[in-house]
Image 1: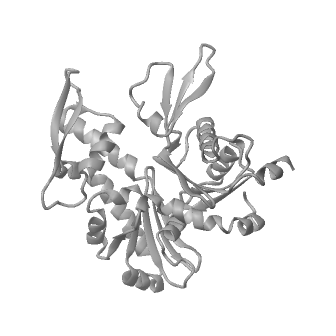
Image 2: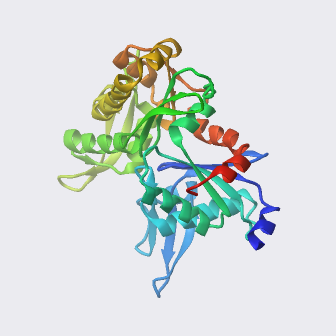
Image 3: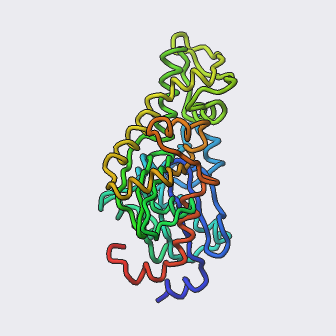
Length: 344
């Protein structure tokens, strides 16, 4: 009863709980949080931990902290790797989205990768409830991304969306208000970053961190040859003598570093297309494929995938926001979702 009373003063939330970034949309207000899924915690002399920073502020601390401060990414491959830190992070974002008013108990719709096990789904739900939610409903990312990208998911028409996030790439075929076919692979932004780290070590004897790898990817990453290749300077540590050095790397070289990851994403897309029922396959040939997620921002990725599957590929407007925008639309139906829910 107490939670229901508190809920009268709380707005419902939609959360895109991503490996790389967390986005929060407040019903009636729009997107109010778009920050990295990173938490910095500090330990006192008794070993008790408390939050030092969350989001963008915490991400700036990666690789730069003393021994009593740990910077943690609690999400891995699209699922919760650290329950306690994830709960802290969700609670922080709930309070921040409500102007730090504690004692609020919102209903929350959370987007999750396709194919989570029951244990993984329960972990997400419990984490949000321990963080203060009075009701939690999970929706699968490829379907929600389709809604956010403006795809008419309720029509008897096949559409395909590929959402490339930080931990997973989600591919889904929608029709008549549901997912007909879907696939989730753990090849996405983080996998690409690791490929860049390995490439720099192997080819230049240069050791760099995840943050630097991501910055290089954003700055000069390209999935296809550019009319004019671009370059940037990369600073790191020489793995042979330990000295600090900087080297210049081109977008052509970086494309080689990303090659295995991009081929893995293309292979997953081909696999889904091969399994798509003929009637829906014809619709996809006509409608094309919609690309969403942070990975969609890699230069020429739409063209790369189009060449791989011989079908038109279009990048959604504001691809980073497709999932949370779709969740915001679905949030309008949370009353009926709550009435018909059987697992949450």
